[in-house]
Length: 254
Image (cartoon, rainbow, N blue to C red; front, side):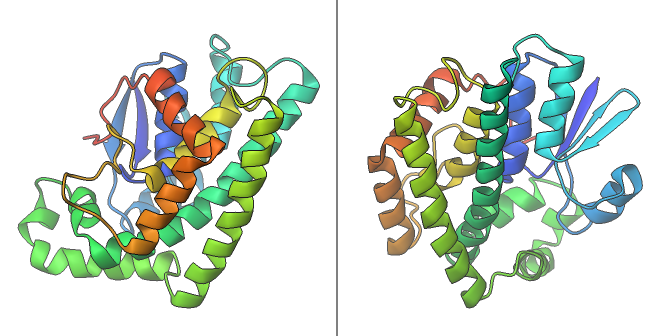
């Protein structure tokens, strides 16, 4: 059985889940604890980030490398086109989406950790010693995330500026391809990458970022969500999630 080692709230892990679901491959989503995951990741893959896919004796880290591995080993339901120009374009858009994802993560976490306890509740899980001692584990987890992702005001402001630029670039690229998909006429790596990276900002139903009724973040966050929703890019992400996101595994993991 394949195992995807993940953080449930990570949009890079959402991208990896979607890649596996698109390939119609069975797998188990196994949760690791932020900070504590580093030793495991370093031991298995020589780096300290998630997601990590274990497929029998193979260990693959990084969502893009997972995509390339899946297309090589499981070519059915391909993520990249055989046409060289389309393949290169998809990889270019995927790289832009990955950069966008880093800035979405910093800006989004700065808002959610300040204004909502839901993210920390998901991270520590429903049971186990972190839940048992949540009075202590939540502040520690918050400090680890704040330090690890540099959630200081200057860095958050820089990420917002870069986020705005990349959203505009991707919005124009989508329009150039007539708004249906980013590359060609069907779902591929570029689409999955962009949609996954923007999902936290749109709080899409059925995803880790869906908010319970009555729970809202800051006015700034809500204004940006409205701005994004009104763009062709935002409408596209919502449509693709509704029509193409056929999740086979619960994002909450085990």
